[in-house]
Length: 169
Image (cartoon, rainbow, N blue to C red; front, side, top):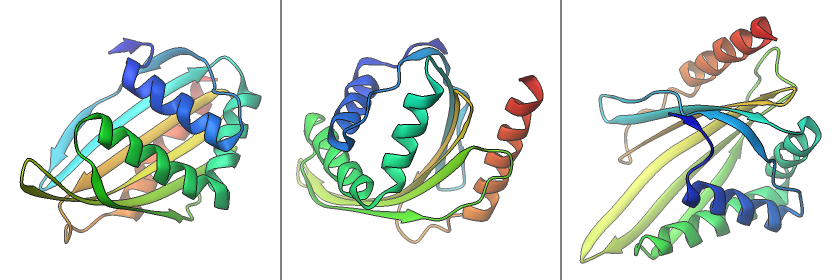
């Protein structure tokens, strides 16, 4: 799907920018990429072309800060509540990654634990993102706890995507 962010994703992005004290980067176009499963992992990707490289970089720098961790935790908790899933706990942990060719790269690991309609929910995942100029490349993975997360493999995929963006620039 090409185009703009869906309304929920846009709201979450705007809430995150407000918490970080940054300008929400406007998106010229979005390619939602592919979503697929690999064993118990659910994997999704997206590429955004932002109107402003400076706004996108400020957002990335904010996410990489100590304040960013608290903001992501708050926004994820608020977003799940909108879906009627009040989470008992949301844990967010920044993880360091290196993505050659990117201006800045971030990785965040998260855990959700809660209950909805009497069913226990337990989800573990991570989000990786790299910025090349005004182009943002994102990769998300999540699964049940205990599932191995190939962070190194995901970082390699993100590095390949960044190389493609640089080659097309």
